[in-house]
Image (cartoon, rainbow, N blue to C red; front, side):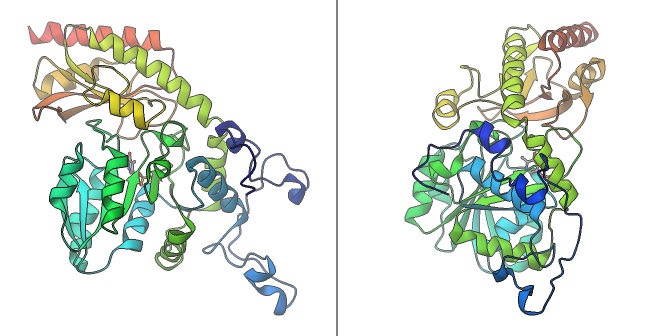
Amino acid sequence: MDEEREPLSFEEICTRWGEEPERYLGSVVPPIFQNSLFTAPSVGARSRRAGRYIYTRESNPTTDILNAKLAALEGAEDARCFASGMAAISAALMSQLRSGDHVVCVKHAYYPARALLQDYLSRFGVEVTFVRGDRVEDFEQALRPNTRVFYLESPTSINLWLQPLEQVCSLARSHGITTIIDNTWATPIFQRPMQLGVDIVVHSASKYLGGHSDVIAGVVCTSRQHVEAIHREMTLVGGILDPFAAWLILRGLRTLPTRLHQHQQNALKVAQWLEQHSAVHRVLYPGLPSHPQHELARRQMSGFSGLFSFTLKQNWREAAVGVVDALRMFHVGVSWGGYESLALPMLIDDYDGEQRWGLRVHIGLEPPERLIADMEQALRHAEDKGR
Ligand SMILES: *Cc1c(COP(=O)(O)O)cnc(C)c1O
């Protein structure tokens, strides 16, 4: 890329950037190269050096367009897509770790990522320490001579806690430690961790990047220095993204900035409404001034997405289940980042260390007034039952 040019806007990246319609008969949408193999007219012309594709486990033109867009969105030098967020996370971790290494991981990170470290990579001699992570001192105290990776997720997706990224990354740098962050919650639209010093950014593209709850995918965005090792994980372990799934993510990306701003507007309205409701104990949304890390959130993020939690005054499981089951516009479901609103009963770690029952909600693209009205009747229903 030409360094002198104006920085690209998210909208430019998500629309035209990285595409060459003239290569593909002027097609305004890039074609899906749904083929395993690329052939050549002669043995000599066969190589990647001759500008050719060879085999889709290594590279594919449709997936390459997606790699370029996702790298540009994160302000990274390069990116590789994977068959799921977990494939991306495991590739990022395994590219950095060897037997005898130690990882410091945020204790509220996505559960399968923690299980990968604790129950799976432990079989290969990798050690892990879990920390709260809201203060840089947590990482400092967990340091060992063999610490190789800080695994971050900010904000986390159930408790919505943040890590002070600049401080944590500068600590990591001074000890030669690689930082990996799961940026699924904020997306690059609202947080660009590489500008804060993070080395490797991973996403579940199954959430906002895809945005329509119709595809499972993941991505690793990083520097030229690390991308070779990531590429090696991709081709040796083989968890590549299928070209059709890459095409679906490209399609979802067209509206990523627009969708995220709408999710933010809707979520803020619902969160503010919930905060003043008599049945609600606390709303955990970094976009609210009442969030204990709101100031940090505003420093390291430029906006807030649609996923958050709130706890109930009636602090027992049946109350939370009662509210969820009384909701009509919210589906019950574990994933998020699509157009639809979702709710789950959840035991939530509040910032002061207390555990309380509540709901995790994803605020979709439905009219927020309708979502609020639905929440109002569900909370009233649960309050009446609790009397
Ligand atoms: C869903 C999710 C993942 C895993 O992504 P998959 O695409 O389901 O493998 C990782 N991190 C977070 C925060 C998630 O929500």
